[in-house]
Length: 281
Ligand SMILES: NC(=O)c1ccc[n+]([C@@H]2O[C@H](COP(=O)([O-])OP(=O)(O)OC[C@H]3O[C@@H](n4cnc5c(N)ncnc54)[C@H](OP(=O)(O)O)[C@@H]3O)[C@@H](O)[C@H]2O)c1
Image (cartoon, rainbow, N blue to C red):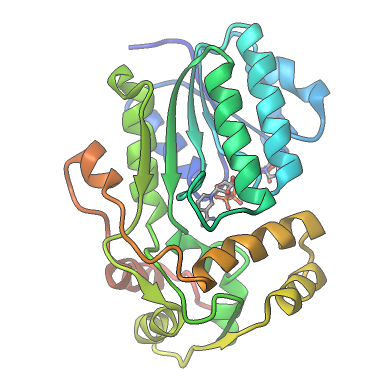
């Protein structure tokens, strides 16, 4: 077992937190690095990069969602590889490089994947569907609590995935070199449109939660108004457009490929998130 810590970039986030916890449970040393961790790391402040990656062989890399942040992640990998980084497990996005995704955010993800491949490190790329935890931990959490999902997804469906399934795949890839050179697409077991998501969340919480299909540019304005940067809001708009255009209505079998089991269903996840107080006010 390695005594060199695994670097976790994004280690307090929706996947990184579970990756960090599982590695610690396996007795693997980790080094968390983000703006709020003891080892400070900021994608937008290159002066924080060298010490964060010093002496590291292997990194879990959860980049920012917007194109400038994705470009910074590519620069980081190139620099860290020159300084001795040997292996990267990258969180990317499902459908990268596929038709119907001619948007800057997908181009940024594709360029980051290529930057990782070109850097000379051993790599595993994981491309998950949208996370169930967006409804419980991230920008949609407040909408669930307020009883109204306001999203630009039209009547498109998405095979939402539990980030604990994503983390199980990441940890397996980090600990087993046989996953080197593989790209895995992950999703949950079934697609749900947003009215079905709202119904699931209503059943799980015992509260009435509706869905309003918000026009994409209006959504950009709404989430910029709630504190997101324009880059992030436009990236989310483009990611939602893929759902809106019915381009994401298929399941992927990466969880079964890597873990030999099925991914968790939305109903089961929503019930247990409600029981653990995700939407208690
Ligand atoms: N959300 C989804 O449904 C989904 C689905 C597929 C793929 N993805 C991909 O997953 C990636 C991460 O998204 P996420 O929504 O899962 O992330 P997240 O949960 O919001 O986690 C963000 C993490 O990054 C850190 N962070 C934020 N800004 C930072 C900065 N300037 N410098 C350094 N660290 C920073 C945060 O910690 P600090 O606050 O301490 O810095 C936190 O640990 C994105 O590339 C996205 O495209 C997301």
